[in-house]
Amino acid sequence: MPIRVLTPHEAARIAAGEVIERPASIVKELIENSLDAGARQITVETRQGGIAFLRVTDDGCGIEPEELLVAFERHATSKLSTEDELWRIETLGFRGEALPSIAAAADVELQSRTPGALVAGRIVLKDGAVEHQGSAGAPPGTSVTVQGLFHRQPARLKFMRSAASEGGQIATVLTHYALAYAEVRFTLRTDKRTALSTPGNGDVRDAAAAVYGVEVASELLPLETEARAQGSLKIAGLAGSPAVSRANRTYISLFANRRWIRHRALTFAVAEAYQGMLPAGRHPIAIIEITLPPDEVDVNVHPAKAEVRFRNERAVFAAVQRAVRTTLSARTPVPAIDTSANPAFAARFANASPPTGGFAAGPGFGTAQAAPRSDVPDFLSNTPQAGAEAVARPQLPASGDLPVLRPVGQVSNTYVIAEGPEGMYLVDQHAAHERVLYERHLRRLAEGVRELQPLLQPATVELTARQQALLGTFSEQLTASGFEIEPFGDGAFLIRAVPPAIAEGGDVTRSVGELLDLLAREDGPQDDPVHRLAASLACHGSVRAGQTMTEDEQRELLSLLEAAEHPRTCPHGRPTTVHMSASVLARQFRRR
Ligand code: ADP
Ligand code: MG
Image (cartoon, rainbow, N blue to C red):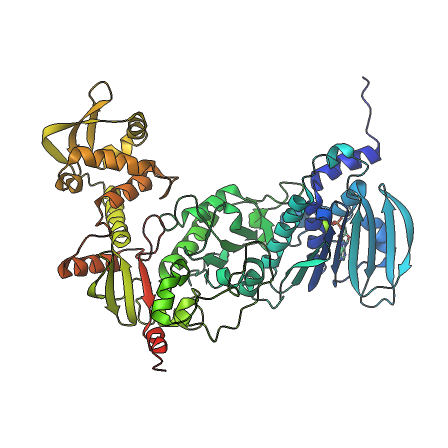
């Protein structure tokens, strides 16, 4: 076939495909335009997941009528005046590709009125060509209506998922911009129903409450950045406490200079900061806002501007991890008693029915409002807001460690009751001990201490195929931890040495089998074999639920827990401690 140059029309369609993949990409481009136009209110309306119809309306600066046509030309932008500016982009758009790309993929109508004008300019494009231009009555701002997406490109239309799935992606886009621009009021109307609306009052937490529900929002901790200036790199935002986790990483939202970005490695870095605080397969909720000089980040890597490159990636990662980690260890509150897990407890102790509805801002994007809570005792609500948080840790040292606790006794041979400066603490003895042993183990490893107890008489153990495989997978970590185990033929193994803690337990053969089974468990830190073995050893070596503890043992456990680096959770992410503050007790007994 002879070589020929594509017609501008063909070229436009090909380029459009890079920017416009699906309805959500249109919404993203239009929202970015609205934000660049200084909008304070942005409304997105969709029908059938945006495939049939979508409209974005803003109250921004608008476009002059005589510029409507040029706005739809490829590479036409008001956002760059010199080439140099390309290296320090401060607007969300700059490529001048969105409007022409949308017009190449769908029918578009744009109405726009500048603040001084009496009427709005209106332009209608079909198949990339102008069909009508004139004026119309409309409030100041811009509205772009997109219909019949890909109806001229059946091949692309085939790639659309269900309306629900496309609509879900639109909601995701909107959600992220709502979190990044808390001062803007966002509304999403899907098939005439308001699916999301944010207050636009400038408070990220309120935006997060609209997006994730009040319950989650109350568990979001403001990121603590060190006072010491980090050059001009600043990290802000909110990090979810380990009490609220999710099954995937999509709840980690990253923004660089207020642009929503996708960055696998950075997402992973955030998740990693929660190492040992969340159960396996659970991921945090976090809103990370990175501010850095525009020339430190290259946003021109990808046509949809979704990926960015940081000039100094290591510094950005380190700053983000430090901010999250510091916040978590300083601020992880001891969870208030969650009676939803055990309504009988509530009934017995509080003579009040457990909270119903109200707080349960469902998954999805409901516009959750705080329920009136006057009749719900504080500790029943499972939201440590409303003073409970302030009560929970007034005299705590800066590190957020537990206060000094005095053992009072044991309940069900499972929980240690303790008294602290601010009320009563219930400590899960197994979880607490796990935390202590886990950290001790990691500390020894870090110090390169290999504690090993050679057995006078090597023990033999028969291992299942699964256990053998685990032995192979973790061989390096097991050796570093003091195990010496060698094959003895036919599924049998010879144990020559074990860590002292295992030797003390007596039955070494059984312990090794149990430990390998613990390594196979689905919870606990998954990604990292070192942490995983540490968690398994800790679990194996910890005092069990149901085991009676003497007062001295209780005291010992509490003081070890107080000294732990992250005393609030076990390595699997369960809480170690539940706090009932003095004021909650007083309220329960109607002393005030
Ligand atoms: P870019 O955003 O990269 O400049 P677009 O194709 O998205 O390119 O938009 C082209 C131009 O149209 C923008 O530079 C801007 O001047 C104008 N424009 C688009 N949308 C709006 C809007 N909602 N409000 C005001 N001006 C807009
Ligand atoms: Mg744009």
